Image 1 (spheres, rainbow, N blue to C red):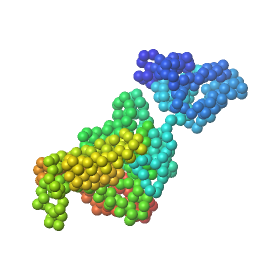
Image 2 (image 1 turned 180 degrees about the horizontal axis):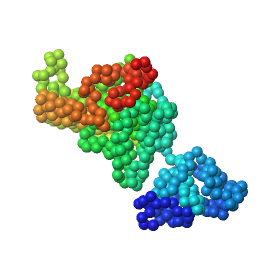
Image 3 (image 1 turned 90 degrees about the vertical axis):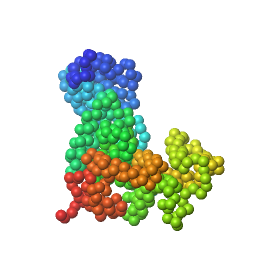
Image 4 (image 1 turned 120 degrees about the vertical axis):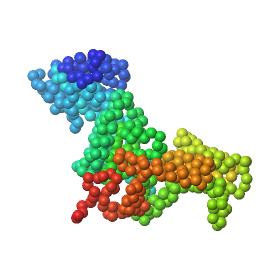
Length: 492
C-alpha cells in the first residue's frame, strides 16, 4: 500500500480494501471529521465516505433513506450497482475509477458511495461549504447599484457571474492547483470573444504551478502567473463586485476565480483599469466623467504634489511671483524632507492601525491622531503647518485611488521622487519622472502594454478621459484582442 496515491491506482471490488486504504492513506479513524456510513443492501456491503462540515447533512440523510429502501423493493438477484446509481437523488452524480480521484472528491466535500463488487465509486455533490452570504464589498461601495459581492465559495461566485451573463458561450474551466491543497481555480470567459492565445497562456501557467498549496489564494496565483519581481505596480486588477467582473468578461477579459477568495483576478489590465470605479457607470455620463476627472486629480496629487512642493521649497526662485507665498514661513531645526517622510509614514501607521483596530476604536484613534498628535507636533516645532497640509492632501489623493495596490505603489513612487528631489533638486524631479514613465512604458502584462497611452491611440485615450454612454461604446477594447470587436449587432 506504500505506493498508493503516487499513481492512478484503480478502485478494487472489495469494500474492505477500500476501507483499509482510507484508514492508511486518508486518516479514517484518526481524523474526527472523516467518516464512513456502512450499509447492508441486498446482502451486499455499501459504504458512504464523507467529511463532516463540508457536506449538507440533510441531503446525505435523504440519500441513505433511498438506499435503505432498496431492501424493500428489489430482488436479491438484481444488479445492485445500477440500482444504487439510479436511486441517488441528486442532480450531480459522477463515476470514478481511481483512488486518487475519489480521495480528492471526498476531501472537497462530496460523498463517495462504493458498492461491493463494483470497482467504481459514485461521487455525489452534496457540498455545503461554511461561509457568509453575498454582500456589498467594503472597498468598492457605490451609491446606486447592486449590493451583492463575491464570497469565499467559488460555486457561488461563478453563479453570481452567470446570473448576469446568460450566454451559452460563457465558459468556466475548472482545475485543481496545489499538490496538497488541490484548490479549485476556474477561468471565466466568453468563448467567441476572448483571445484564445490569452486563454491558453493563462491555462498553461496555472497548470504548471507546482506547489504544496495556495493558502493565499488569488495572490499566489498572480505571482506564479506574472512573475512580477519587485515592480510595485499591480499587473492584474482585483474586484469583489460581480457586476464589475461581468462587465470585463463582456469586454473580452479573462477572469480567474479561486476558491476561498472573495475577490477575482481580471486579466489583462492596464494602469488605467486601476483608476476606474463602478460608481462612474452607475451615474449619467456627465456625472461619471466628472467623478473620473476628480479621481484622476486625486491620483496625480498622491504622486506629484509632495515632490513638487519640496522642489519649490528647495528652489523658491522657480515659483512665479503671484504664488511666491508657497513654502514654509518659519524656520525649523528639522529638514523639510525629514518632516515629509515622518508625516507620510505617520499616515501609513494610522492606516495600518485602522485595519487592525475594531471599528468603534478606530474612530477614536483617528480623532486622537488628527486633533492631538498633529496639533501638538506643530506646537512643539516638530512639523511646520504646511507639511501637515500637503501630506494630508496627498494622503486623501491616495485614498481616492480605487485600487489599494495602486495606491501603495504610487506612495512608493512618491517617496522615491522626494528622495531624488532632495538630492538633485529640479534635475532630480525630471530624472525621477522620466524613470517612472519608462517603467510604465516598458511594462507588459500577458503581452499587453501596461501604459495604454503608448502606442498612442486617440479613441482609446478618449475612452480613458470620457465616460461614454453604453450605446455609444460599440467596440470592445483593443488591448484584449477580442475575436468579436463589436459589443452589439451592427451593419458593417
